[in-house]
Length: 239
Image (cartoon, rainbow, N blue to C red; front, side):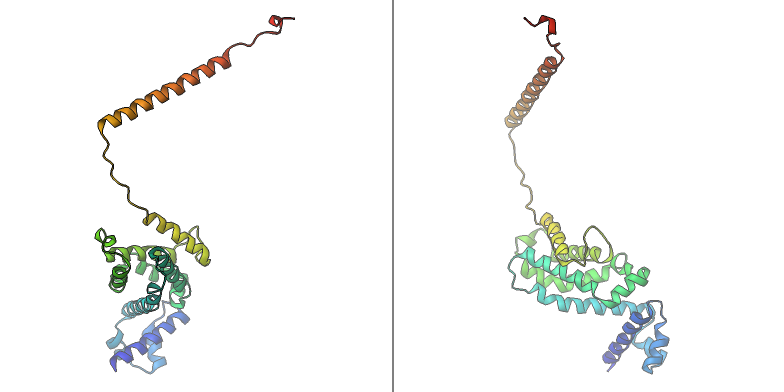
């Protein structure tokens, strides 16, 4: 079927990229290895850029399939499950041969998918993750932010940990887990409440502050004067 042929072509393209790099002229090699004509390749997968795009879309879809059990895990605490998902995603990317090949040898091809061309991946992630976030978060938690925004936030954290080096060693799972947990501790901090203070309270606070500063200043002057006061000479000491 056409869909099966397309998958076969993409499989061959993935293997070529891993073996030969992203600058390889895929149509010529796939046609030679698979016994397919170039018109057939263009018909089912398009040009080289279309093949790369199709591969990235397919790999992202596969990633969310394996991520699904992590998000459906038995861990009841939302923050712990979120950390598990981010750590899993980064570790998954570190072991992904096609992605690591591109980041190592052809970053100019791969990096745009995490930066200037990231919108399709973010939209796909939002589409696949929204049902999970709607299940994980309470209606009150979602009242101020949309699941799509949470998904994009997660993507940006994961993407930055995949493509950039920093103070945390992402190959060390425990260190990575602690780092992500520290990031989420900021995100999950309770919002500051707005406290209405009466004018008289502000006046009292200012008065107390001024009195305190005057007391400290007076103490400081007394200490300086005591320090500067000449000590009795030896001749003035009674015998």
